[in-house]
Amino acid sequence: MSMNNTMMIDGYQAVITFDPDIQMFRGEFLGLNGGADFYAKDVRGLQREGKISLKVFLDACAEDGVEPRKHFSGKFSLRVDPTIHEAVAIAAAAHGQSLNQWAEDALRQAALAT
Image (cartoon, rainbow, N blue to C red; front, side, top):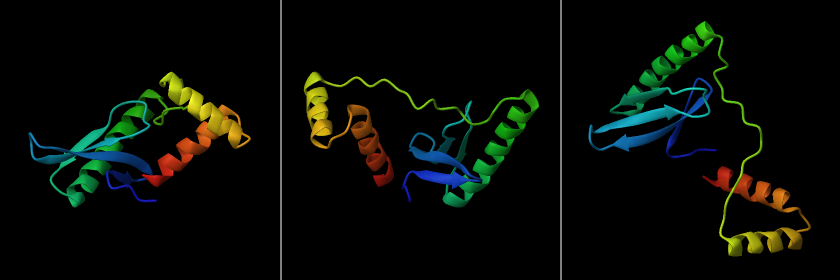
């Protein structure tokens, strides 16, 4: 799977955006128990600066005894318009699934499509 706005660095995923104010790309690691970001003008620089930023973050976690990766419980609350709620409940029932099963499948497909 390849996403245009993400980069994998040493097994950690970062989202990449462009900051027009400073004319640089910004990388921010996802799913960490803290912030770790980095800036560069090109892909090679992002990879280099990302490795440095990640190492500093991981070293600080090790020093403080903190787990670097955020723990996800598998639960989250979602608020939608009542008409959407009704439509997805009907779609789930039509597929012989609970609303939770149907939503998980839809979310999985959407996440893998990006």
